[in-house]
Length: 292
Ligand SMILES: C[S@@+](CC[C@H](N)C(=O)[O-])C[C@H]1O[C@@H](n2cnc3c(N)ncnc32)[C@H](O)[C@@H]1O
Image 1 (cartoon, rainbow, N blue to C red):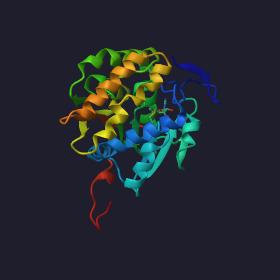
Image 2 (cartoon, rainbow, N blue to C red):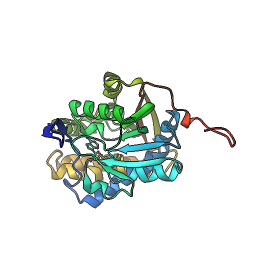
Image 3 (tube, helix red, strand yellow):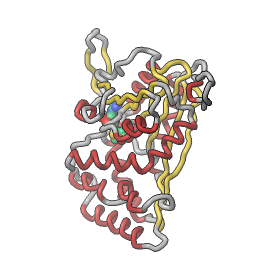
């Protein structure tokens, strides 16, 4: 649960807590590699959704909860005119993100009010309690310029994707993961809660959208990061899953790989919303000679 501390000014603020513990159950380097492969798999689709949501491509974009910078660095490559800033509560992770990066202390994003065009919050909300999420959305609203946008990418375990062959026998195993993350303050069905939460703190036009990446577009082995057994090894170390569970997940993945019709489709869920105010037109496509 969140703890409270005194800020330098003496105000009581909520210290950020989260169910994300990158060093638990496996070498940190393996977890960094997982984050990178996960980003690689769906980044193009996510960038498409960001653009569709009016992302200002020449503005200031915070990658809030940037982790090791897997997405931050890709955004910088693809949006050379934007200023993409990695922001996180974890100084060890933030040290892996090339500058510019900013450390959140005492729940405060260290930028001025209304100084940011867009904020991406990717795979962070699922690790936060409802109270911590509200604090985060309120802080995002503070830093966004009028008309600025927040883009939240996160999970819905009831619609994470589909495989051929189907794997209904794994449902009770994934339910254990769901309950373990919930017991730790997280929520693996968080995305459906985000739009009303954003509107409750003052955002407008909240909208949930979905896109997909499938093995018809890229090698099926790339999906191991989501569907394969490797990401569950830490859950055995922490006692959430048994070795028998891991073996069942492994057999399921091997069945997909062995099936001539085997396939994987992973859904990307995104919620976008705006801060009230004039819509920033920086995202509109401009042609040469046109005012931006
Ligand atoms: C699963 S990682 C996701 C990293 C990155 N966004 C990605 O998609 O690869 C979750 C990240 O959220 C960060 N985090 C946790 N609580 C946070 C908070 N209250 N504010 C900002 N970041 C937070 C963690 O330190 C971690 O880097």
